Amino acid sequence: MEGVRGGRMMVVVAVLACAMMVMVPEVEAVRWIVGSDKGWNTNVNYTIWAQDKHFYNGDWLFFVHDRNLMDVLEVNKTDYESCNSDHPLKNWTTKVGRDVVPLNETRPYYFISGKGFCYGGVKLSVLVENPPPPPTASPITSSSPRSIYRGQIVLPVVFAIGTMWDAFIWFW
Ligand SMILES: *[C@@H]1O[C@H](CO)[C@@H](O)[C@H](O)[C@H]1NC(C)=O
Ligand SMILES: *[C@@H]1O[C@H](CO)[C@@H](O)[C@H](O)[C@H]1NC(C)=O
Ligand SMILES: *[C@@H]1O[C@H](CO)[C@@H](O)[C@H](O)[C@H]1NC(C)=O
Ligand SMILES: *[C@@H]1O[C@H](CO)[C@@H](O)[C@H](O)[C@H]1NC(C)=O
Image 1 (tube, rainbow, N blue to C red):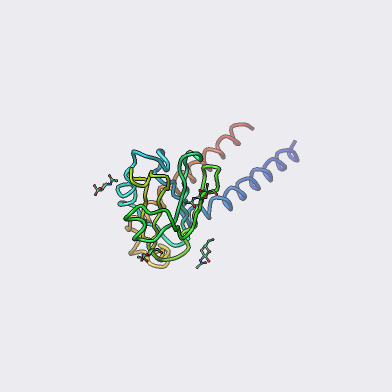
Image 2: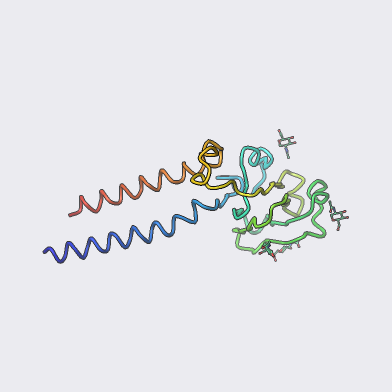
């Protein structure tokens, strides 16, 4: 009996260790779902969606959309403002309706949808900044909005692990 319990304990520890390893990168970099629950679509003002957020080098943009309607075109500032889709810098459209764009350079990024949707507001600009130093290196910055955001991710993770743990204990 003790052997079985010990074996289960090892499994629990291994599962928790894996969960931690998977979760850590998500705390480091943020994968932004563009438009949140509305996705990449008409009837969303992406200027308003982006204005209270900080985008850092290493984050990702995740465009979720109807693959038959929208595309995801990276353009320059002029073409963003004029909704010109004739010569995109990069066409990120993969035709599955889920396009992931790594924000790996510290600069402004401009995205539009073609087929006229840009004129209806399907356009996004984000300014990608260098990440702030980690809170442990300089505790003074721990009140920055970024740290608050990360705190909101970490806390549910801690609760989730606690709940999993309770469930396992209770199961025995
Ligand atoms: C954007 O690209 C167009 C076409 O290549 C060019 O005419 C325009 O000057 C560019 N704008 C910027 C800000 O680079
Ligand atoms: C972007 O790529 C998609 C998928 O290959 C294609 O259907 C679409 O026409 C392209 N758009 C532009 C403006 O090049
Ligand atoms: C950023 O990612 C793009 C697309 O994957 C790649 O072409 C580019 O070289 C990368 N830039 C840097 C600075 O790594
Ligand atoms: C989005 O909201 C901003 C700020 O209120 C406004 O200036 C802009 O015209 C709006 N964009 C669209 C496409 O409605």
